[in-house]
Amino acid sequence: MTLIIAMFTFSLSMSISPGPVNLICLSSGLNYGFKRTLPFISGATVGFVLLLTTIGLGLSAITSEYSLIFDTLKYLGSAFIGYMGINIFLSAGKFKLHQKEAAKPTFKQGLLLQWLNPKAWIACMAGSAAFNVANSPVILGLFVTIYFMVCYCGIACWALVGVRISKLLTQPKQLKMINRLMGIALGAVAIYLSVI
Image (cartoon, rainbow, N blue to C red):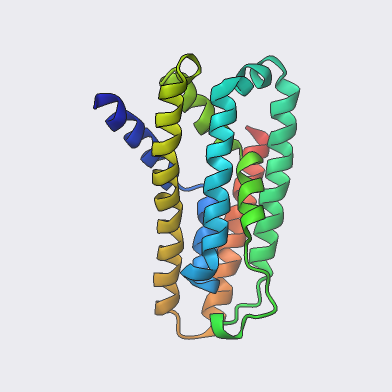
């Protein structure tokens, strides 16, 4: 039982803390609503648990041995996060009902973002090491199952916060201003992740 509580606590702290995926979910919930953000939430969750499973099965040994792989992922991830930030920054600032032309984040983008997200790699590697999942398929399976449920709920919470914020907005220019701030925040995250 102690192991389950520890895994749950670790999963929750990593899933709910701010990061690129959560900022995109917040922005998507704000602009498109919860239902239209669900594909991105699902993709991000599936992408994360696939990454966690792969690292738990031994990929971390390869990436730690060949730092060029991790560095390449870091730069590709930072570029993709920056790209998503630019899209959010340039968003028209129209309310949900009128925003048919804008592209909402997709399942595929959520899946890909986790594999290019340095925060996800760090969380997977730290969790795999902390719970020694490489030595037991049962422990790895338990950790992946717990993380899937917690990650899905944690990311979804950010989308729900975006939905709540959207209810407070009364003018399109307010939404546009928030989109600009979210885009700048994602850009700052991309720059930060590329230099650490």
